[in-house]
Image 1 (cartoon, chains in turn cyan, yellow):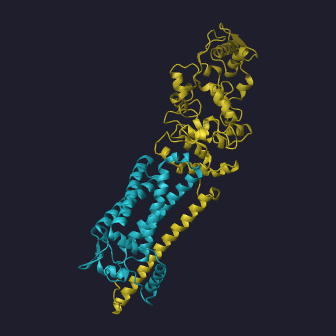
Image 2 (tube, one colour):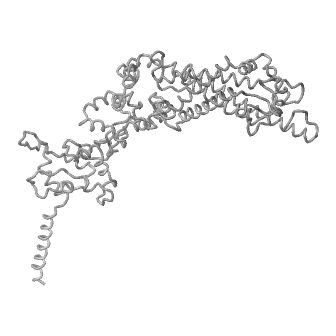
Image 3 (tube, helix red, strand yellow):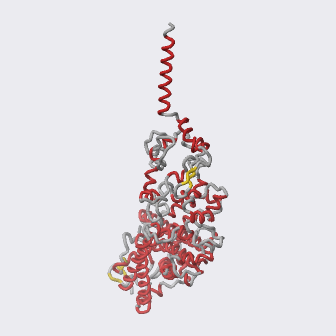
Length: 214
Length: 366
């Protein structure tokens, strides 16, 4: 639950931080080893071993998250807060208009901004697609025992292109939004301590701390 | 003055005699060659060995007159012949007498002989293999001509025939291949043996120095196959090289995994045929067998799609459209990030102005 403790608000439980840490580590290793292979910076032997271990870690993070959704109240609360609603699009538009013109009323986002929701569902979809395609590619030419080559070619293109998109969304945009923008520079400590400054939270979400908690 | 005449005549005779003796000692080139050709210039001049083998000893004077060595005397190469007729069979000619770096005989400068000694042929010769080829076996002997002369034994168009004199099976395969057939049609861009294997530096494919070693062969093929200007002439896609290099096989090969497939693993080394030829190893019906050499159990699915796939090419079909869609999405996302950053900068700038004017709205910080 997002509660008040001095000047900070709770953003992530210990479970969520473990999940986030494992996900971040695995995504960095996956992108690093994948790009090294794609741009021929390292041989396939080492990069493939690392890529496969990191992929196993990613699946573990996804399972940890799924378990959390089943057992943890904070997960269930956040999951409800992350649900995309029609109002999100209108809020996002009004938010941009307010930022640019200073006119009208600033939308009150609650616990998650529309951009954070979009990033969350982007990660969910990305993980599902990358895990599915990755499992197929993991089998190497063995997958051709039951699939035609053109499907494998398509999966390979999906996997590598999706990886580039994830690099833009997670490494560039998420890091900018969470750690560089909104007065968080040099870092939003929530991913380590679970808490962030209430002042920044209020400004970013335009709501009182805890208000967005369902 | 009379007594002087017989003396002058005697002196002249002495001079002539000395000149004649000198001429017999070191005959002029033409004269000497004529003496050799006195026998060797007769068509049908031959010797039957005790084994029954017939040695053709005829040397066509026309070849000699046209050859690169036309200015050379016979004994400059056959240095062990010191009498005519010679009783012993002359030794094999050693081309290295003139062909070395720094020679003053006018032979091309270079250490080709040293290269040859380190080649598979030179090593075989050193090991005592009497069938190993020496210079004359490829370049010819009395008819030797520069390689850029179309009549030379080692002229581009004649090379397969020369190599094929010993490498019979490979020559038969090459003649049937797409390269061999093109050569027969007079195509000059087509590779012959030496284009892939080298000339004097030919090494066994197992040796890493060989241009057809598993680690080098894709680069050797790429020397021609990556050139758009050449490939376009024959309707072959130059992108095949790049698509291989970007594939798992290509990357593995580049990083020294030599069991990974290279060009010749699939297309073969000498029997290269177009994919629409049913005999080709890359014909759709034969692909399971070709892939199966490394991937046991390969089935018809291996042939249901492209091996050399270029996602940027429209002919890649659904792969092209998916790739394009992701490109648009990724660029669009990057654009969104830039807009986000610009909006943040604008907000900060606006906030700073308001703060300076003392009218900053609550909650707005730089």
